[in-house]
Image (cartoon, rainbow, N blue to C red; front, top):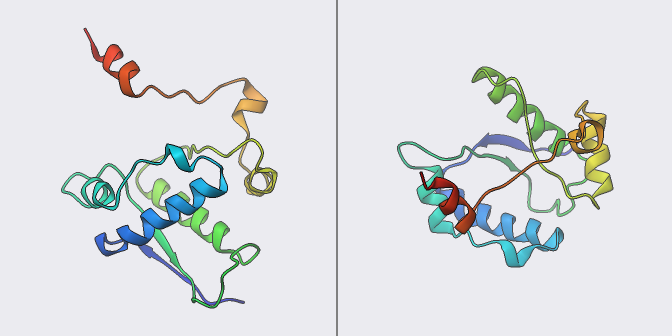
Length: 136
């Protein structure tokens, strides 16, 4: 089995986190939608009241392809452990509709495709719409 470790991210990881966000966006064909910067990550994730928490899987450099090595499962498990410890009862996330291998992976973990199974849709309000909604 491949050696790897999972740990809490630090502010020093923000450059690599931003790079990985960019790589994921390229893979998902949405690179033009990514506007977050390394500085945004440093401010938003590592201030006194962070907007997010992040964990990192450190993998030896020689292992370029990560699929099938158990790292994704280990990361999801760690997120679930942290969530349960914080009192969370659900883990919600999105996956691209065309990414069948990812959807199948999540289904194998016991996750449910709520859009397909319940008719619930994940909604977002941002930009001008959020400004409009914020008006009393």
